[in-house]
Length: 144
Image (cartoon, rainbow, N blue to C red; front, top):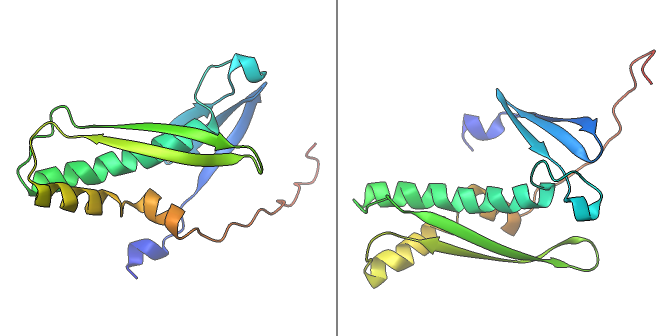
């Protein structure tokens, strides 16, 4: 295990209004909301859409690194993701990712690219889920 793997990282999610939340990641801010059809204001993606986007962008990142190592053009590199929900419990039931590569690849390169991208951090986490604990934080005196 590398030292980087041992480092704890933090993300904070703060309520804004309605179904909208602000997410702070290092010096970056991202918002989530719900579609108007589900009672939100549709000002941002849903948490589930960000989850799918995280997987797709992780695959894209690994694909770009692979392309750079093998002198494959990256202009036009893209990943599309389609997903469907499972009914019970509420969760994503199926995800299909399509990797769009802007160059012809040999069968060996295709197999290697799929192997590399199948081991991106987000996909690996889905394949070997982390332990998730949900705890109540201690209330600050005087907080409502």
